[in-house]
Image 1: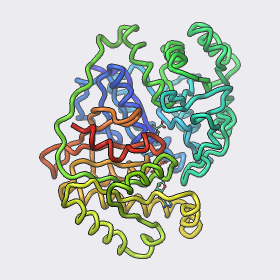
Image 2: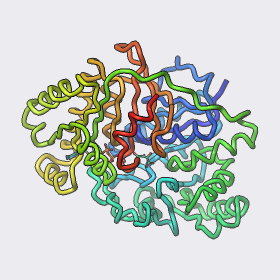
Image 3: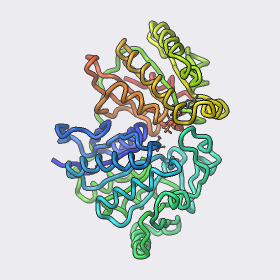
Length: 426
Ligand SMILES: Nc1ncnc2c1ncn2[C@@H]1O[C@H](COP(=O)(O)OP(=O)(O)OP(=O)(O)O)[C@@H](O)[C@H]1O
Ligand SMILES: O=C(O)[C@@H](O)C(=O)CO
């Protein structure tokens, strides 16, 4: 058995988001953490999403990790490859979207790919190459304050052009409006001009369907999880998939309930405030973490004590842009982030070993740190809590029952996400 789709995601919440949409569109999908060994059995799945932590690391590391993931997915016989990045096109000054896309294209020997970050159900749309979050341009959406990948330009053609030596083109909405064949012709005309990367306007699900059809023959597609919603139907029409798979059911959850948040996005800040009105929480400060381990120990004591009642309890470093900037000015951007990620990872490892069995993590980098600290290998996808965020389950050597885990992208989820997540968990 070979897989149909092999995906490489540049962070862990993004990987879960894509896997969730593939499952909800009827594919059997497994999420793996990092590049797996040769012994992983994928005979029961149609798609594998390899979760990397390659969004904000140096570009050459991101390229090396992505190529390793590609080689593994090629060995599983994938018929199409998907490079998943954020629906808000999160990039550092050097990439990593451009360098990784270039490297994957070169390795696959392809001369063109599409760039489809939109996720309309979560308000991410693209028009005239400009990315909107709800009714705001990207650079006015809160993403301009992101601690690691501040997005200060909504013009994706311009953003991508600064990350690749190759020309960047656009599929504008009027072309999409005329259907998949016209879109394919437009892409072919751009290819003749040497345009390798094509940013695609997308306003709604219908546009995603047109794009999925227009790029069905492309070995590599790139984008957000919205495109993942549309691809499985194409695969069924092409005869690559036989049927609509029912999403698998997770085992009943057990253990106490913990939320760890390192996301400083607007949505997360509102979710933290909402949670704290109802349940206990402990705030971490990178400046204190830099001084000694005293605050980490205090957080651990607090969590242990409050978890006696089963939780939920929240430990968070989430802070408003002024506080984040102040910490970064003192510690440097990288160190501030690392201190928080290390602390939340250590808390997760300790508290899960002591009985936490239901864990929500907010933030992609944060999720990467927590999942790595827990040494998880694979995640099974379960019930969706909010668009883009499902419950997942993972097996740990130290626990008989599986760990129920939700990895929430920074800007996803309703204001009551941290409390409702536990209510919808079977
Ligand atoms: N108070 C703080 N000061 C400085 N940095 C912080 C603070 N709190 C969290 N961070 C760092 O900010 C970064 C937030 O990134 P993360 O990817 O976890 O969240 P996000 O970007 O909102 O989520 P996503 O990538 O899913 O959209 C992390 O590296 C985290 O350690
Ligand atoms: O696409 C998104 O917005 C999310 O899946 C994500 O990548 C957040 O890190």
